[in-house]
Length: 465
Image 1 (cartoon, rainbow, N blue to C red):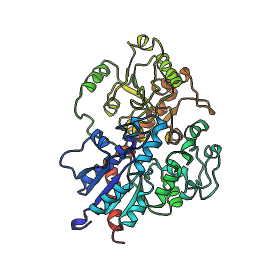
Image 2 (image 1 turned 60 degrees about the vertical axis):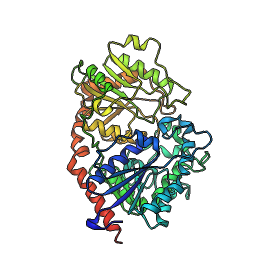
Image 3 (image 1 turned 90 degrees about the vertical axis):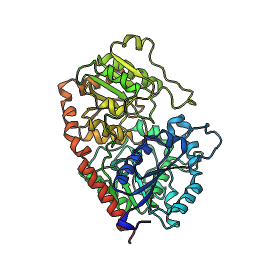
Image 4 (image 1 turned 45 degrees about the horizontal axis):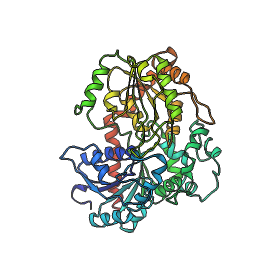
C-alpha cells in the first residue's frame, strides 16, 4: 500500500488485444518512471510477445494462464491469433480469470486496479477487497462520449433500439458535431451490441458496467484537443474523468535493428522524400477479399510507390486467407512492396521517404502518424475506427476514402484519387499542413508528463478519502 514518499502500487489488467495491451504498457512505463510499482497482468503468451521495458523498470509482469475452453484454439491468447467470429470464445476464457485475478489482488494488496472494458466485473472485485479501481479506456473521448451513459449501455433505458439510432448525434451531446457512425460502420459491429453470444454479455454492457463500477475513469486524450468531449464524459459518468494525454510511444525511434527493418530501410532509402504511401490496418482489422482487391488496384492506379503491411489471415486458425489480384505483384514490383509478416510501423512512419499513411484510423496508429508528420487517408473497418475517422475529418486531419453509405463499398479509383489528393495535389495541402500543426499538441513530452503527474496526484489523494 502507499506509504513512504507516497509511492503507489498499481495493477493493470488490459483486454487481450494488442491494441489494448500496448497503450496499457505505455501508461505503465510512464507511471513506473515516476517511481511507482506497476504489476502488468496478462496471459503468458501475450507477456512473451509484448515489447520489454528496460530491465531496471518498476514493472512486474504477472502471468495468469488462460483457462482452456471449448472452441478456443490452443495457444490463442489474443484477438490477433483468431478469426473475428472466435473472439467471443476468447472473452469466455477471459471472464474465467475472475478468480485468479481476485487471488492475485488478495495477495498483492495494491493501491489501485486499472482495468479495461471487457472485464466489467473487475471493479466489483476490487471494491469488495477494499482496493480503489480505475476504468482505463484506451478509446478516444468522442467514442466514449458518443456511446453514452452507463444506464443506456446497460439497457436501463430505450434511447437506442436500432442501428439507425447510432448514425445521429445523441441527446447527451449538447453541441453540433459530425461525430457518429456511418450506417455500414454500425452494421459491421451491431453484433457487439447484443448479448446473444457465448459470453451472454454484450460489449455495450461491458463498457457501461466498467464505467459504472469504478472509482474514476482514466481515458487516453487531452483536454486541449477535445475539451467539449471531456465535459460530456463528466456529465454522463458523474465521477472524475482523468485525461492521460495521447501516449506517444516512449520507445526510441531508432531502437534495435532487425533483419526486417534493414531490408525495409534499404527499400525506403531508394525513394524520394515524401513519395511513398505506407498502408497498414493494425492488428485487429482484416479487410474482406473484395476490399483487398480494390485497395491493391487503387495503389496500382495511384502510381505512387507503396509499402503495404498486409495480414493475410487472423492467426493460423483463420480459414479465410486473403489473396492479391492475379498479376498484381508482378505488375507493381518496380512500384511497391507487400509485406505479409510483421513490419516495424513506427520506424517506417519515421522514414523521410514516407509521405502518407492509408490507415484504419486506430488511435495508436493516428498518434504515430502525427508524431512523424504523415498525412492520413482513412479507411475504417470495425470498432471505434468510424468515430475516430469523424473526429479526424471534422478537424481536417484526415481524408476518408469515399464509400457507399449502406454497404461501405469503395472502388479502386476512389482509393487512388484519395491517395493522390492527400499526398500530391494542391487541394490536399490542408491535410498535409494540419498534421504538422497538430504535432506539438499530440506528442509534446512536457504536456504528457503534466498529465501523468496530475493522474498520480489524484490517485494518491483519493487513497486518503
